[in-house]
Image (cartoon, rainbow, N blue to C red; front, side, top):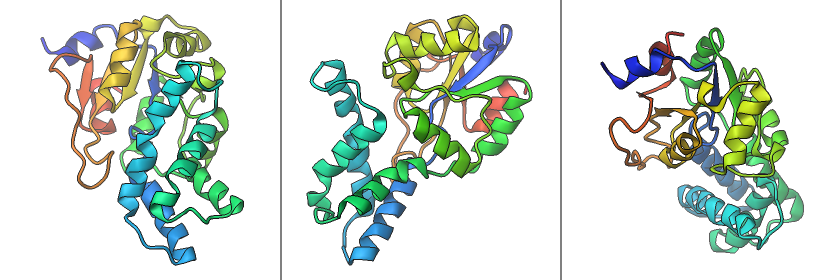
Length: 243
């Protein structure tokens, strides 16, 4: 019996989705917004490298909050701190406040992968579908509106004052949905997020996003059988979940 068949013997009651990379193509979106801003100001640069540098600051910034070096900070705030830190190196040092704020808001305007919305609509027929993201509530709300994401509800780490992979984020999501942690499945393209969820009793589904980190990206390493389900895209995930 396969891992997928075993998991489907006791299907989850709800699905919670990671957002950046799993639902939306952050790399292409950020690179395009940076290129547009650069064109406005006659700036030349490598905007794929800029997108990577901005994202690379994400986990260290959250760790500063966890260590108590920073107070609890919304992801919008962390993104702005990182942007200000890397602006000079990428030619954006002279951007005024309005342009920096607009560029920082690019994370609210990211677009989904082609399979995302059709897959979510299919899964929504059978399961409650929710976000479970470190992105702040307003960011996730704006993104859903902009990208046409058909969530049943939006759940953000902001509601718990804890970023993933803290226990409070995973268990808080299950609590708000009125189910046990073992009845909730996290869907993500990041093995580290799924490992955090699994360690706190959630079910896990890994969806492959080989271009998450750009045109030259590759899949992260994981062990066969490590997660309840592994899918190439949301259509295949829906099939595995009999949706």
